[in-house]
Image (cartoon, rainbow, N blue to C red):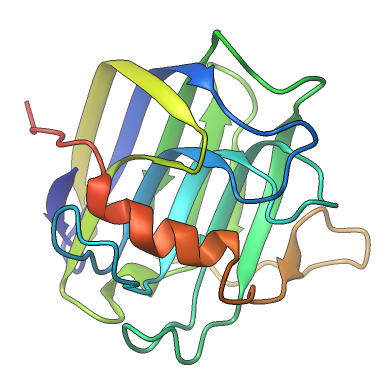
Amino acid sequence: YTELDAEKDNFTLTADIKVLNYAKNPHDGQEAFGIMARDVIGKNLDSAVVASNIGAIGGFSGGSKDLNGIQLYSRSGVENLSGKGSLGIEKVMISEFKKMPKGDSFKLTLSKTNSGFVGKIGDGKEFFIFAPEILKTQNNKMYIGFFTARLATIEVSNISLVVSSSKTDEPKMEEPKKSPSDSTKKAPEKTKDSLIIDLDKFENRMVILPIA
């Protein structure tokens, strides 16, 4: 992972991610892979739960009965390491998996702006979640890197990180109004053995990403 200033910096991180393994059949909602940005991180290889606010893109379902695919998602409201105040996960499906990926590659991009997070696959359509300022809730630093949870195994290549200034970037927009048919939805905070707990553990093994 790499560390940026949560107050001053925005970023766009792009990489090719080859998925060597991903999920059980049927999937159990515990699996995930991709690019993640967090407002706090634990000690290296420590499995203790370190709850954080997040923005991420990658393979994700959120539950055994939920659709599985490449999604853009965020978690907000977390006030401390215990997860107090969490508002749960907001997610947008970008591309549903027809079958669980194995040997498949995805070019993923995650951007943080003054208004929230933007994600896309390759040169495809951009998807957006309004979540301004959530990565400076617990810390004045943010941590950006690559992650896997449970069975997921990935190879990452062609990494590109572009950092910009929040002062000169486009200012925060007004929150978009959501219709009942909006594809973005809130999922309830999961229980102790949920994927959320896994993400809070596995982030301590995020890949080191030097800034070029």
